[in-house]
Picture 1 (cartoon, one colour):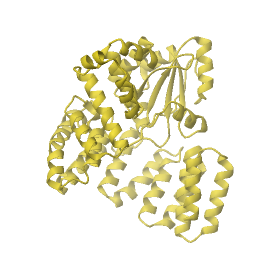
Picture 2 (cartoon, rainbow, N blue to C red):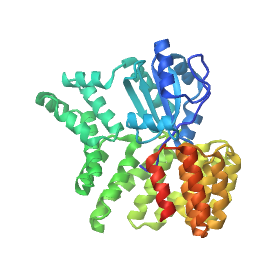
Picture 3 (cartoon, rainbow, N blue to C red):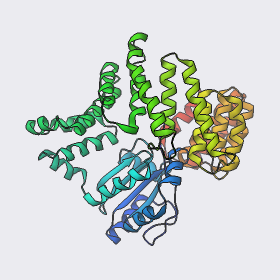
Picture 4 (tube, rainbow, N blue to C red):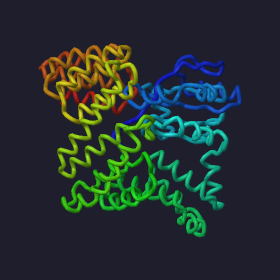
Length: 430
């Protein structure tokens, strides 16, 4: 996927909920006391999906009713506790909404940003069913096609293609034979085959699986699967690759008209459809079409935002990405200060502006923005900011200052996030 997705921290309004993002163990303790489920809302300040969910979905009467029935806990993926639970629950993309029963067993999960009309029915189904994954597996073994589809979908949500297919192979042959005739089961199975092929870097198998998946009813997930097809087909001869991609350009163009550029978009993630369409146009060598799709997206975002970048942060961030993808650097340089002014309370846009400048070999201009970002960064994102401060300082031949940045950050963060710490040390010593 092109993006990792997140949801924002929200004030919690009943006695069951903490006023600030809580540790998961604390949320489970409250759930056991109240005998209600836990809804874990995994978030991070850098991921644009949180902006959509906060503005369009996680509010209003339906959200208030959901809070009254569950313990809602926002889990910051950049915090040590969030990182532990991300790993424990095998969450590899944000936003992620995981429902646990009071004993901590998973009842279900929802990934990626969703329109309100889809999110709440999905949550209701999870809460009403009260089925743990183990319970669904038992039903699947007994022949329930719905349960088989749900289990395969759960493995797909974990990007665990190999494990999901291995589980499917354990079903009795008569059950698999009947399930193989079910469209939903077949689609989920093909998606797991695609996931497994990508993990194994088997491009031929990935292309074949992606084609099968794209032939099914995958709705708003189309751009993500097309991304896989683009990656897996990259080494094919141009005529063969073009034959694969041309039908997808038609489908994506139709998706833009039908689901994106409308008053009430059917797909919550509009960005991926736009960028994937531009990527397909580029792969087909159609620079004019690539430019046109980006120009239209930029113009649409500007029209809807006006001069108020606080109106819809998701849309404002989409505008930023479209300008990056279109390489309209002068417009980006004008936009970043406005985004920083609109959202002064986090590190995100000062950090992103610094990166944009550094990537264009403007280290001296980038460094002050990284220093501003460092004042608000914490946890894992503190390490990300430090990484780019180090790169900027080294580009300016200020190696002693770079070493001090690393020492200070390691003292602040302790032993958390060992992979990121190793990468930071490697950047210093490179």
